[in-house]
Length: 185
Image (cartoon, helix red, strand yellow):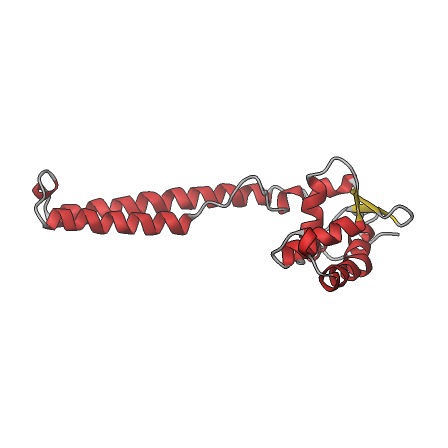
């Protein structure tokens, strides 16, 4: 009997499963495939990813180390909670239907994270340049007083911060609506 049989995936189980990068990698790879994948091929993809190389350039030691871990630890754990099915006779792994329950917890590789830090750095640079141009009395901008220039800069940062806040709030409210049970195993 699996850990979640009859009760669905609890939030604790989902977080435990996704706390390991190899398990996240396995689920992510399987989500992108329409057909099962061989355990050895999957282990080699993980090893290549972890060693920042290609599958063809993996050493036997790198490949074997990951294969053993995936075979003995991660595949059984994912199978025990009903997220994958593994056929030991063929060595094929595929996503189970229940895996759809954790899609919202999985990072979407297609949708990149918004690089807010870059926006803030860019705005700081633009603000500094704007302020220097105001102080240097460059035509048009030189007509602005220093306090007005300061207000423009503060308003620009306030607007960016508001957009950042609203974006995070939307993402968090989407996460809050995930229908995963709370509680222990």
